[in-house]
Length: 263
Image 1 (spheres, rainbow, N blue to C red):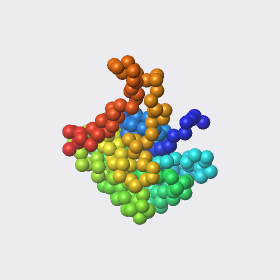
Image 2 (image 1 turned 90 degrees about the horizontal axis):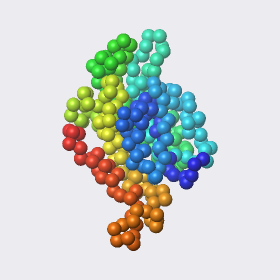
Image 3 (image 1 turned 180 degrees about the vertical axis):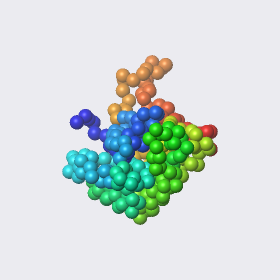
Image 4 (image 1 turned 60 degrees about the horizontal axis):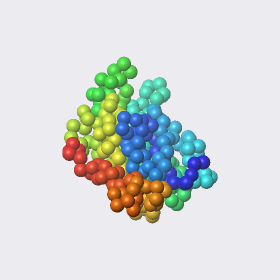
């Protein structure tokens, strides 16, 4: 194990999570903001649904682990929402089972530790026209924005019942002007703009949560952030400056809340 021990944030989900470290994704931006403060651990599985997630919970989140995550961000739902295939194969999971599976995931994570916090991400919207254009050779993929809404609403309701923090991706992305043409690479997966929207919402949840201690990056200590005679020497020739403690990242974070192309 590499030390010193930092808080662990685990991103757990399907392709929206797996791809969050590519294309200037929300996972990579989160890791940048939390550098020297928390370790961002990726557990993303492209194409997966909530049914498969439940099957491997004990492997990804063993209850007897010496160190448990401080935060788990969970996303499943988009693949579950696909129309069922006549063969019975494919990722579709009926809505009632999807809710049950997400409840099982939440219960398992809550049992890990009193200090393990959870944020669910709902199913995001999709651009159906772009999907048909991008995946024309695959035929009808059976993914519609209306079905995504149904699964998003179900996730929101479950989070309300179980007192779980949640980011409503379906609504947040569609608040953005021209979201259909600016937020997707293929009608499903996120452009940097969509990732920025999601990161902003995740940071809002973390900032507003009454967690002790707070997990917001601006309030977490910086590893080895103490002053040192080996830091950059100031013009007076007598003092030093820890350049890594500048407010660049705070400023960048604030820009997420004041983006002219957001509306």
